Length: 359
Picture 1 (spheres, helix red, strand yellow):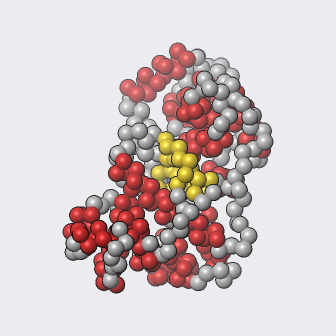
Picture 2: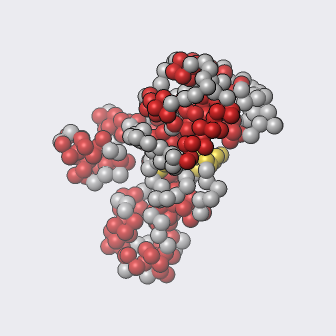
Picture 3: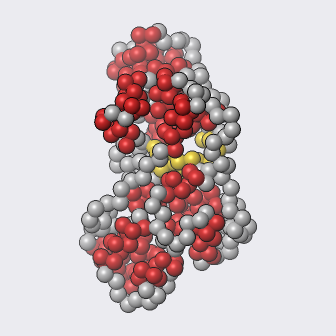
């Protein structure tokens, strides 16, 4: 229904009914009727709404898919995020998820494998130290070895976990969540956070998918997911190879180099050094105290790790176009582009190529 779409787009834009009324010149009462389905917007009103909400008119007219709901949600660092902001994030996620489901329905055979927990993951996990072995086993089963994972999003999507990059308002304490949409496992991560935080969030949410229902009653799931995330991104053996088996001191430059090789923060590298037994807990505490004293608890020194991007959705749209499953107009709609922007991207003109690189 068009009313559901107007409501979702309004929440995604962070607008109240009154704010939307001011921007469109359509009364608050009329907008309320649109959203409740008791009145249908005219063509002129649809154009005003699409401009104010930053969506295409095709989005507002697209039939609602009843099965697209965010289920089995696990939030990360969300407890202080206002409900209004979470509603806005959820609306954006549902829009992207709906386009995902619509795209996948176009294919005669499902083009993405279904995620399955590797057989090497134990049915019962009784202590945090065991998570080191779990991370190593998952890496081994997925053919990752012990080297850095250059593209974590591509790795997860290759195993059947859809990754959605959410638009998150500035200064919002939200990193990501895990859930299911239309039966498909989904990880949502903010696209505005630094790459090291983004990767840790992705690995943390992977932990929720791997460990669900497997932890002993005395283990905290968030703590377990943090431990698994660190071990998955930076295996214990790799820590020993880069830092040695036992150290009584560390140089900050060592952690900085480790950060840019494995795509984790210096703080996370410090945690891993302690978890791998390279440094003592006492030394870890002293180094963390110095790290925060230098102001690196909020912003670490040097060049940040670049955020990751997903290209799978765009690839599957162009594949569907090439196979004649859809036409150009539908492809542009799925990608959220104007017809002219889509033509530029498709023809690989300079402007279009640059735009595609920043999707």
